[in-house]
Image (tube, rainbow, N blue to C red; front, top):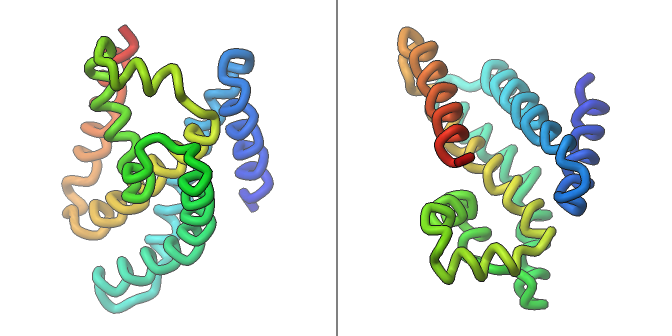
Length: 171
């Protein structure tokens, strides 16, 4: 029932990535898409039928890989063939957001300046997928292996770190 809303949010994200300077208000669609993805992932994990946590994780990861990896790897490969992708290894290993975060800590460095001025709009799409994939990789582990009594503390800590990071790196 949420596919229509997800499609609308995806369209907003796609437009926002291509018109970053002109439609800043659409950047909220990315947050909404991530929240909705988190809800849907949690629901899929909750409903996963297997005898053990390892079996549920295997099923979940296999379904995600079948759904996302072929198209993602095709796009990354084509961009690499045409030499249109900076830091291809970061895309192939889904850690682009970590690479960009580390670059942004030293905004006066030549590597950051070069990345900033050579940023391609297709990179924004792949960055979003990279962030989402890291969420898909880490969240199920937390969901299945963190004791229930610690789940609310982990949630509050994650929200707190997110807010503080946003405040700190905004300035």
